[in-house]
Image (cartoon, rainbow, N blue to C red; front, side, top):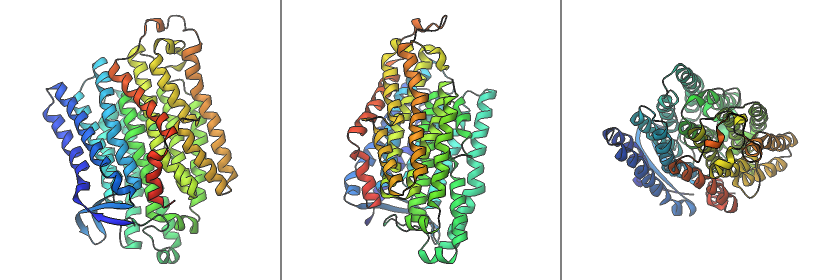
Length: 496
């Protein structure tokens, strides 16, 4: 692959950095404040999109901003993997802004300027993670996301909100300080650099000579990275995610689909493929144990989701499960499984944000959180529940929605590696996915409302909420019919 040095790569970061401060300046002009989020998201998306032809030609954009030490720099790059995440974050930011307007205004939420400011900074962090060309840069932006999503989780400023936000911060900042920083130090000690090799996924930062001379230290470094990147929500580092559901629903959508957990699984994918490389994962026996941990998380989180009646809690455990599809696929380091795992970063984003948008629209329209109380609600909110149903099919892996494409690659990747345990976990999880999603849709359309539930008085949420969730559900369908939209970038990145 040819690396092109270009400062143009900085422009998406500049726009997402400036936007939050413009939002603060427009605090008293509500329409302007919200328009800034729209415009900044659209400009950032357009700037990232202009790089697509270059990347599809097999070229990588790179720019070193400044150097701290030899091998320790703040450097950005845009390759096939980074493009997918950098594309998703601003695109969904535009739709989330429309949804935010309907949600925040309908419920007359307080501190809206702070809310939009922190939301915008989180997108800045996500774009920085996507474009990080080394571990140090990735770490800086990873922490920016953690710090500025804390006020969003604690937004309601009540006891439940502060408790959930405290757990959120302790898990994410605690693991990054206890594990991620030592992993970074060990990497620099062993390899003398923190830069990701941008020439392929066979070898990573650790050369074969370093791996041969220090196999146990490299293994320890790997374990520290996996534990330190807790945003990926692998068990047992998952509990922060359900606790963060005390946040407003658009924040939950940000956490689960746009920035936080996507930064987690993206960072794990980057570390496995660019940090360690497929060959080191195999030689040191790291591949299959990681896949087993991910498979365990997929099944157990799905079982817990079955027990949850609160719709956001059920979706939270669904996210814990679905994120591990990405980790499992990448960790198996089979060509097909890696493609499936990386595809799921994008596919899950569109489907899961639809589900959380749907949950928020249901709450705004009916103030219902309990799934048992949603009998008949689909007949009053057909657009919301239709979109919710389409996104649910994606999570289950039903064709032709995009989740099917991801799972198809993952199943064939498990067969490629002759991992029958992983195959069983994937098939079992599909059954469990259906077990906790189908009843929601069935209740909404085929059961009579509970006595005294006030379902008959409900109607669709505001159009500013319904339109975004409809568009994201249709995007899930589009990606099912045209998986090449993301797949072409993954093939370029991995040389598949």
